[in-house]
Picture 1 (spheres, rainbow, N blue to C red):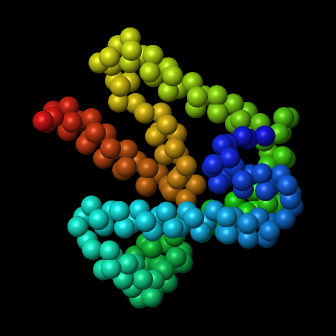
Picture 2: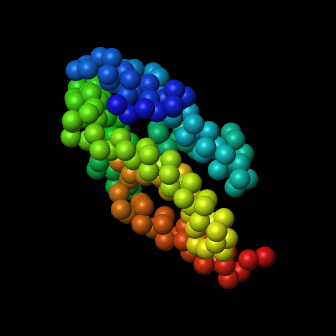
Length: 186
């Protein structure tokens, strides 16, 4: 069984899959009311935060987002010509099948196909500790730039994202957070 902190909404979704296995529609309803509403609100607020940093006032930011949904043809459809495809909607449907119909007990319990994935929680706890001990011993090593919680949480967006999203992000992150910082540090 995958154990997540009770403050993580995904742990509640996993628990729901254990409680009512074989009920994907109930799972989708629960996930929509209990998790998706909060996640979309946080995404909306993060858009406003980005607008705040870019000195865009909140009202034009809100109306710009509302304008997009009403004026961009085919938004969130796979055939949208400008790439506004909303890949998270496909993940939502797939997750309802995985957590609601197949149920987590058939996947992650002892003796099941993906039981070994449970041990990655141990890896997630050990990697930051090893990184910390390495930086204590060698303070100027490359490990002082490694942040394993961020690396591991970055994989959370991979189901809707593809290599076209991850590889450019990695290159830009490396150039600006390592190369530029090392050569042009103020």
